[in-house]
Image (cartoon, rainbow, N blue to C red; front, side, top):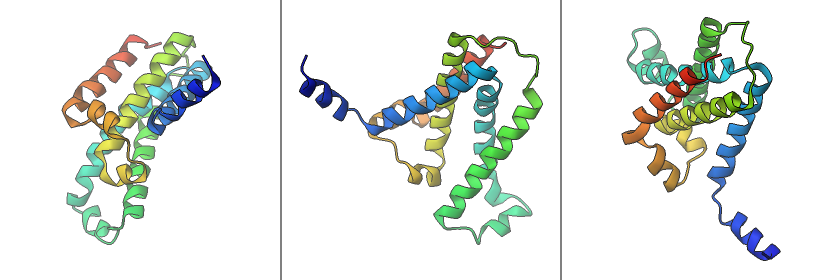
Length: 163
């Protein structure tokens, strides 16, 4: 195998797969270092934050205030702020400080499950999809018809690796 064929292989891989790989490895290393609590909280908070994001424009007090934040950067900040808020709430509600298992298989499953949940919710919020638009292959795998199954699969993965 020549160097040219190796470089040709890596230049034909979409950037999306590199981004997903880096996010998965980062979450897996965090889970390996300190347990799967943060990855579990991220996975559980993302569907809740999406639900809140879709309800915001129709809410009684906040809805009229958000009419002034119609430009995409403000919508991104609101969506990411809701994700962070829900992550912190779920982390505080579910984290047990006595987690003792920091195995590599648990960390890898946690990283993959959290990345899948992040990817599914990222593609459902249009303003976040404008920040980074994943390619057609990623969209066909993680799109709306399969979103329920991906989220359920990520949740079941955390039930499997529960410390």
